[in-house]
Image (cartoon, rainbow, N blue to C red):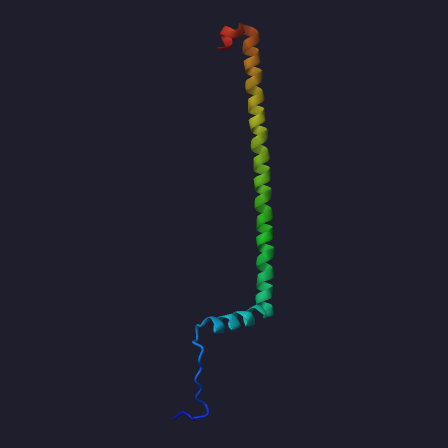
Length: 90
């Protein structure tokens, strides 16, 4: 048997925007949520830093390798030209 005073009729549905917004605001105010958000931001920043470092060192390494290869090719072609002339270079 349900007592008449205990029965409440609500106009908001359980999953309406108003109820979800209020629940989200209460969740954001908790220390556990804020600590988890801070941990996520620190993790994301450190991951981004590591990825940027890897990109920078890889790009620098590839650039040095390319320059070394081109310098070696130019030196080799110059030697070919000096020894055999234009017909030997072709």
